[in-house]
Image 1 (tube, rainbow, N blue to C red):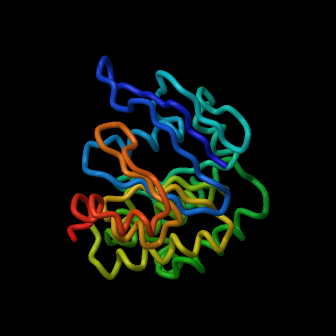
Image 2 (cartoon, rainbow, N blue to C red; image 1 turned 90 degrees about the vertical axis):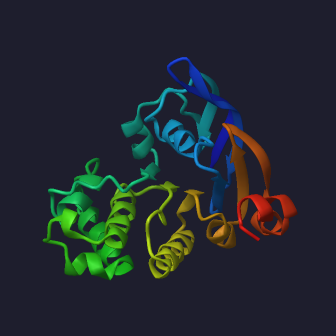
Length: 233
């Protein structure tokens, strides 16, 4: 579904991605783990069209997308739930969800919203409330639901567990697993390496803008170097 070849990106003169090769197959949950500053968020921004690519290419569902505008990538089925949620805090929960569906005007939008409420019942309860009044966990649920309103076949999910209590982290990871059952492919960037690898099919380890390890998630969990550096084991 998604192939990245030799991807490079820079902020000004400083290159932060140094030739990333990565693949996500249809129906997979693939996670990218690594320390802060490794380039994980920049990678997702490159894939969603928010950060320019200086070299390499990105192929999504057989189409080269390296220079395609972000809105067109969404229309083709690639959506992102960003780091830090970035919801519209002064708008209601329902308004946030409708903005996620800005490309669509058909009757399915209402069904999509009901599907979001089934996945996140608390959002239905608070649909008319201002999103800025939600708890951190509820805001994260809203960010994911808003991205799903774009009807993605592949969801880029950036640090969904950041700043959440352990119980909420478990709920968010359960949601990610449920997305797979809904035929949504997921590329997950996470600081909680153990939690991410536990639900993923495959994983990549990033260090200073490079992929240093890759393989089945279970193999990475068992790898002594990964266990020591990222899992605290």
